[in-house]
Image (tube, rainbow, N blue to C red; front, side, top):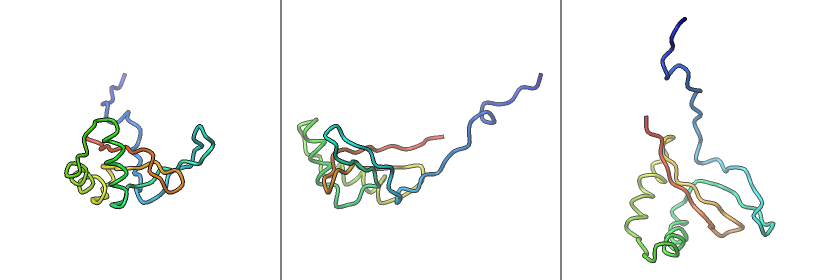
Length: 98
């Protein structure tokens, strides 16, 4: 029996282009929600959404995260927003670490 390392059993990684919009989905109210890469102009909406949950408007924190995850546009780092019409209704930030 031949033993393979865990890394050879892993599926190939898929690179995602953050400039490409994701698929559209319908919100509970029937409106279309799309996922796309965050833009600098989205920061006010992201800050407001976060402040609704935390009670704090952390402007410097979110600018820093945007510089690291949004403006850098590296494949392993993503800053995405969910948009309904012209309104940002959600966001997600993440990175892949090897």
